[in-house]
Image (cartoon, rainbow, N blue to C red):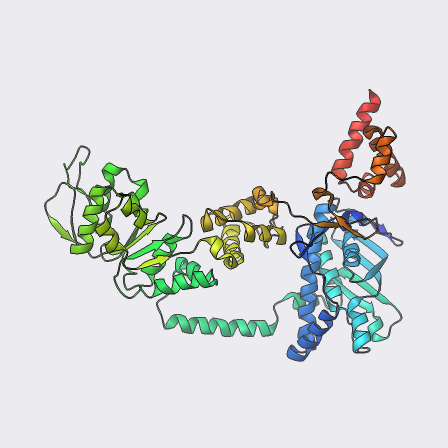
Length: 570
């Protein structure tokens, strides 16, 4: 396991190469995570505002939590790029990412850790730490260390990396008048106050107080209205877009009467959930809710399914049984895809709506029913009437109170809320802890047209949870590979730190150096062999280090080395 009192960082090109500038859409990416280039003074203003509003102790805890989260996310990235976790080079990704992002210049003094045993000691010198520089330039010296976000970042990265709580502290800070910036990290239990990190990471007491007040308000609101069911809560809370709220408010106005409601919308928008919510908020909530998909019932059986059948009415009718209307008596009947009803079934349905009574198939006895009818269709019933597919008089009877449920592409602002809801629901089902999805994956979801609407989104999130390891973010490929097919024009950083168009979108362009090599009789296989040989020599035959020099993963280089060895043996 790595132990070094004179450590050196490896090249950071494998980290720098992950940065992309998507100037066409105003995005900066570090692999699949979105970055922001902002004025550093923003953080000074944030610090002052927080300190003035909630006090220095609470402000410090909040900013350390923000830094901890950022360090944790960078450790997830480092794990993908440098999977050989037991090496110092892999751990060095944390300090290197902090430097790449312009937060601080880091010089390692000592890195000593053992993943198997959980032992850790890290000591680093900082130069130009942005938090302290801002403090000194604008507020002067402080009585206590000033780099709250940075120490939180170091603690978050190391905690993820080691799989146990690691706390960094500033042992020396120039903002306090010391000559150097020196930070030391140890397992939290080895410090004189082992509970410090736990206190920092716990939700602030102020947040708990606000949450308690919010819960009290929610309980008060609930006590003044009918209790919400889980299904109703899905509809009522997972959606803040204007079009969604308009549909919900319109539905609510129908709760306290028995008017038939027509739910319109594309497949997968949640029509049955709306219907259940209407039922559960009504005075019929204690009685049955019966849902029927008319498209799933064979045409010759639809009348007996809806209205019941008497024994001997037809071959196979060995017993009398009630239909869906009788089973829903006193409650609500939801008929989905009502346009698929046969002409005879439409006639019987019209009679039930007009007279409140029905006859079972093969019976002459009339039965009274009290049913709230909610129908749904993803077809235009008006057009079905014009085509002779649907009775006009039944359409006018059903079209008294239409509610249009917007398609998901019409309420894109609700996608993050729905994703969070499905993550919470499905990760419990699959016994996984998935903290969320990557920024690039979320961007793809926001741009997708969603022909399958909410049902498609839930299926996509479920796929992502299945394919993603525990405690990892769902990336774009795991969510749905097809979402990433539309490539974007972006830029990348060269080795010397300059921006250039990404080669992924400029595949066929003239490069002067390459043009000269081709004119001189260039042979690709020989060039690759010599380049790999040189990289292995510079890295002293360390495959991981050579791979970083070449901008490859270790597995990619190992594959090429194996091919070269097999050619040599031949």
